[in-house]
Image (cartoon, rainbow, N blue to C red; front, top):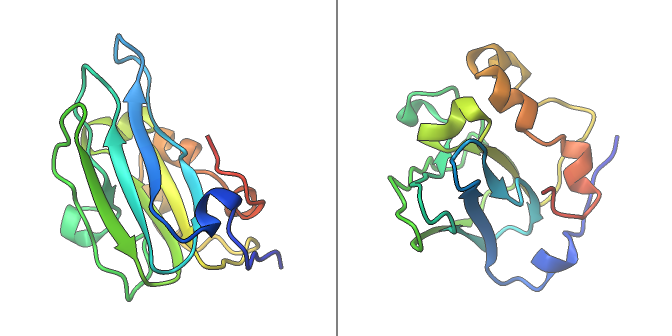
Length: 155
């Protein structure tokens, strides 16, 4: 069992962590950077739309958003609604666990991310029972828990 007790240096200070939302000028490729992140409980994550020609969302995989639950049971769902270029959305993560999220208009293009709050067991696939309900590109782009636990944000 691989677990991590300390987050990466970028998140260790206890401050806000930024995830950029962007893509190629043509819109043919879109992403969250980093798309895999390890933080401490109580930290805030701010998603910033750095894409000058596209709107994005950050949306929890949760039934409230029409998707299977892929966040901890005690955690609240979120949906930023459309974030215009240069704008941002932030939430504070208080419940430990693995959080999977996506961009509503770009989920089928693989614009997904994973945040681990606190620790996680890398030998367990916590949401394997819902994998068949996600687009193939989304599953392909979700970073492995073990990779996130290495302490370097997954780009």
